[in-house]
Length: 538
Image (cartoon, rainbow, N blue to C red; front, top):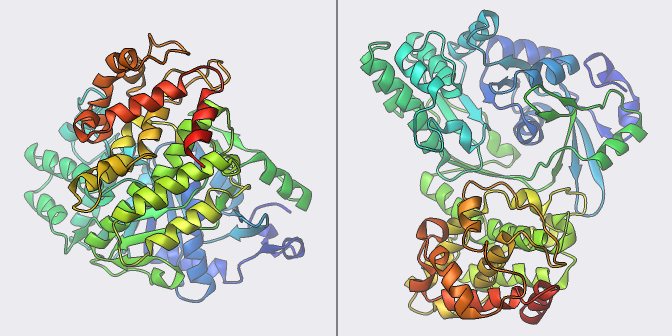
């Protein structure tokens, strides 16, 4: 059982319980090559588990007759060593909360391309696709960092600066190459298209627009493109940049899933580690829950993806869905589990949900403190969303997600994941910040986490974070066992007053004393974290 075109007809796939698509793949590939509708940038796991599966369900039900063209612009070896050797096929293993798995061959990818402007064959093919009348949308999963044109110091990245100066002929930067393809579409007759970021970041459409617009403006200013190109990018009736909210957990392919597939007789499952250290396997594993909400702004039309669960709505509703998820119903719970999971030595988020104190903590954060001020988007019910998160998604034993991964960049997450709720309490006529008891416990837990000492008294390595060194400087002189609140206050109050991290000054908000009191209890000695959680989270 090999994952390639020739072996799709092998009846052993069905015998072993795999879903094998029945649509005419050859006809689909030919039609897509001739009349592409949907091109996607970012060939990683989320794409294969979500967007590619959406396209497959459309094809399987006869709601479309073209598939997806996938483009990789960061690590070309993903295409060369994984996609093309498997004829652009892959396996999707859906890990269900009841302990069962669904296994599918994903066959909706018609073509895989490399975003390399120095390779004429590859780049000319992309120019051809972007010149096609039929192309309706380009979607993206390139991470939030993919849209950034500056480094940590705020300086323009050298490749971007070079592209600004030299124009669209042979750009080096990612967005420079994407902008060059849009320039090709402009030259072909100012053809319409939707540029749809489906990356997991707020107002993602604006981030993509700002990056592309910067290139268009630079090229016009430097005489490398016509003024009409900038007008084209700025005209949302020709080129739109819809907002979207995406939510689906697709962790790195797990060894346990690999073993399931091996026992089924699937061959050639060994992962590839590229020269850029990307780890990629011929299968992906993902949770069953998924949400995709997109602003319905498609100048050249779009596939009927609402038939497979995508919600199309207005920009304001997309924003409300994002706020519901990020500020109340999912992300705050994840961060609470991440911080305490690292300190308590957990290796899987799902295991934390078996801990009565941690389960109580996230329920109190979500239901008791979050839902009273939740942003209700109307298209998804917050109560149902958080019920699924707490009862199905996070406890899923098959999901090999770790607190260490989720704790990455915590300093960048606290303001939106908790700060917005605190602000809502401050602004409320019927609620008081003094009602908040569990969000401050997470703040205190982060202070304890920054010490890099677990609850057993052993050192651990905090996850990567751009402000880790700065944040740790406030606790570097605090020893385990220090409980004097005046001493602790002198050390950490400047950090708690940092509105760039917390979204507001916690002293002014009236929360700093409670956070420091909790921190003193968490720092009382070995086992104090467990004792404190058990004391307050019942």
